Image (cartoon, rainbow, N blue to C red):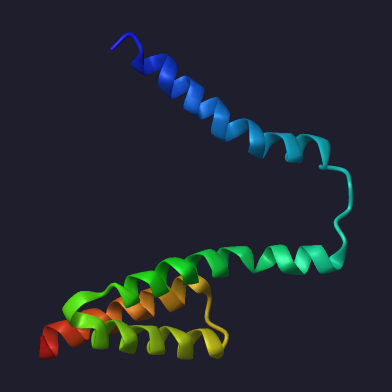
Length: 101
């Protein structure tokens, strides 16, 4: 127990400081439009990497996962938000499992 608190505080500092430094020192510096456009795609890319890995490793219900991915792709294509796309994939996969599973 004596080493747990310093360990947690150390991990907190190690993860917080690399995020804080750019915010403090680059706060006033303008970002070029090209770089800003690239940075906007990072959340979508990270989420896609996690979802695709889950579908590939998806065991016995891989077809349901692919249909959920297809439904999310349609929502995203027509301008839906990232949250709406993910919720659509979850709901469509759930309905398929309940109805046909």
